[in-house]
Image 1 (cartoon, rainbow, N blue to C red):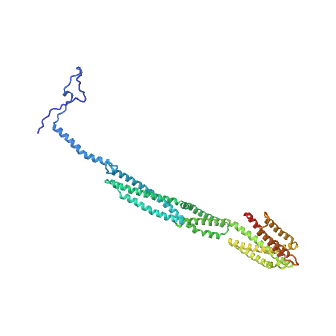
Image 2: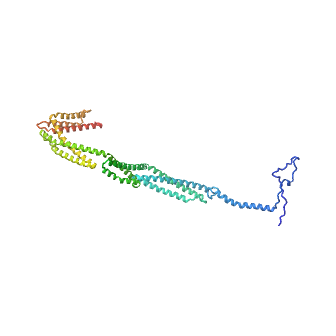
Image 3: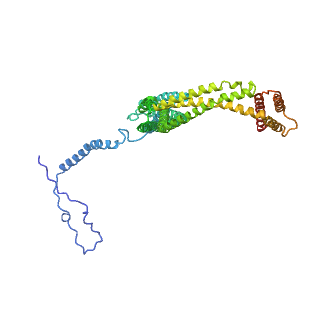
Length: 493
């Protein structure tokens, strides 16, 4: 079918590029042109084709709407899943629940961190301290650990029970999630406060433990250096030609202790390691000091051998004179003045002989460089010679004193009376009457002195008894004087 051509389309409005002429326009302007001359000629299009094109355009727009929707919606929800664009009560509750979840997670992290730090402190204390207080702290920490596990499970259960990212999350479910998560957060916070208070109470125990741990490495190093110094000193002594077998044995006995120190506190404990290190330091220092002093000690032993031998010879000579002293005592004085000295000559001779034998043994020990044996033997020799010297001197001193009192007893009497009068003046100082506690023993001393003086009368007086009595009186008076001074020094009347 052939379409009938339509008439050409002529616009009925003025052209956009050429303004319409006004009615009052002067007649000098160009006359109005026909429409065909003003607008370009457009080809004529049948009306049916124009309608078809308009309908096509509308259909294309309708088909493009779903495609644009599919492209725009993912972009609109890219930041929050496939939630609704517009808020509402459920979204507000979801946000509050999410905030509660974040707060609970932060509280859980803080509690976990604090527990880890406190566990390190507890391990530090238990590694050093075994006291009842330390054991009690460990028990309390274990109880707190059970409490922490309980609230942690509550928190985890609350998180697992609610999926806050669901599209269909209802407001009531979000509210319940917020309530449970807030409760879990509060429980975590309360336990965290308990943990902090417990940590504060561990301050003294932890301070002591940290101090001991800080001492550990320096203590072990001092022990090693002490052993090294002792070994070097021992080598130097041996290099000089002296033997130090006993010192070497003592140093070798410390080798197992050094092995345990090298094994560390993890195997033997901090306290035991510190004690072992201190013990090694002390013993190694003793070995080092003795090794360094060994040459001087050897020279000292040599000197003592010579000195004691000379003294033994001199005492032997003096002991030979004791019988002569006893002979004179027997001849001039009564038996009470000398009978206690009868055994002095024989005892002196035995002591001198024994001392000389010990000296020979000490010389052999010195030659064998058995230093402890040589030192012990020399000490025995010295004790024997001291005893002999006292006995031999007592015989000569007895004769001298008896000769003096026999010649003139007034000096001994005046000496004793002066001591009594001095004590009496002290007892009466600041008082009108003496204290009976002081007066009575002083009066007794006066009477005792008078009785001793009376023994000098007669044909053969016991001068030794007189001397011992006056000596005893002076000792009693000295005790009274000492008592008075102590009482007055303490404020007694």
